[in-house]
Each structure stands twice: as C-alpha cells, then as structure tokens.
Image (cartoon, rainbow, N blue to C red; front, side):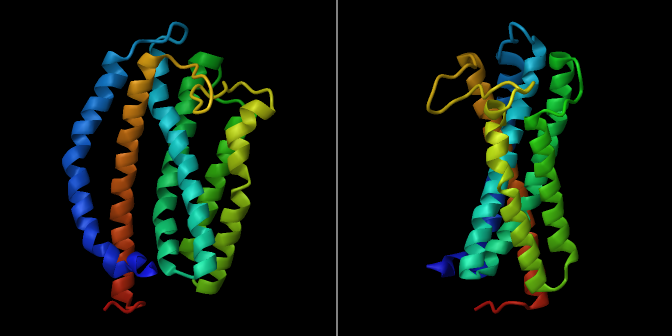
Length: 236
C-alpha cells in the first residue's frame, strides 16, 4: 500500500491540486472576509474588536493541528522508515510555525483592548510560546544537522517531547485560573459563541486551511525537486 506515498505517485497530482486551489482561493477568501468584516455583528461587550477572533482562533487551531500531524507522521516514519513521511513533516513545520506566530500576535492585539495588556504570562499564552519554540527547534534541527541518522533522532525526540505540550495548550484554561477565556466552541457540549459568528468563523477557517494546503503543496513540490536533483531516490 505504501507505493501510494512514493514521490513519483504524489508528484503527478501536485500541479493539478495547486492549479485547482489557485482557481478557488480568492473566491472563498472574498466570501470569508465579507462575512467576517461586514456581515457578522459586533460583540455586545468587545464591539468590533471581536473580529480579530476570525483570524486568531483558526490560526491557533491550525497551529495545533499541524503539530499533531507532524507528531503522527513522525511516529509512522519511525515505525515504517518511509522517507516520504519525514518530507511531509518537514513541509508542514513552517506552516505550523507561521500560524503559531500569527495566533500569538493576533492574541496580543486582541488582548490589549480586552484585558488591558499586550501580554500576560498565563498558562495558555505561555504554552503557545513553548509550542513556537518547539517548531523553531525542529526546523533548525532538520535544516542544519547534516548527518541523516542524527537528524532523525534529534528531530524525532523534539517532536515527541513537544507533543506533551499539546494537551497542556488545550486544557490549560480548565486546569489553571488564567486570563484566557475557555473554549467558545465545544463539539460535545454547548457553544457559548453566538450562531451569527459561527458561520464567518467557519468560513475563515476554511480560507486559512486552503491557504495552508497551497503553501504545503508548493513546499512539498520543492522538496521533491531537491531530492530528484540529488538523485537520492530511484524513480521508476
């Protein structure tokens, strides 16, 4: 079954996916921004400031999702020794770092009018900074360590160690008394966010996910081209 993960099989469909995403991205972006900036109502307490949520919340979700994906792929790579899993993880990492930084920055901008301060070392914010550090360490390890065996060991160790932080980020607002508000959307419980804000939030999440897919495919394609040029693998 793993021949489906070969570079040859994957490379054949990347161009088509990139072209398809390019054809729909700006349409969905326009719709998402229209709902987020125009059609959605201001919050009764936060006013227009609440619109930052439409970038901040999806960014945080994507940051956690990217790390979880890298964690899963790292385990698969460790078990099955399939290089493609490592290349996919390598391509996802910059996206995760980008959206972690975006979540931190937009959270800080949102926090100033809401909390009266740009930053507070509460559990959620501190754990997000730690997540950013693990992304940076992972990217540095795979970029600057030249010995493949050592690179695999260090990068795997960093991802496994950093995975401990994921549930801490998720449940920090429940485990500790923090400034950060609890989750507004609960799949198994009652949502505290108004229904008029769920649609623009979902649309902006879709916009950012499509953007992530585009960045990933372009990065992944570049990595495959690099490998082909180095003749590290056999392409039949």
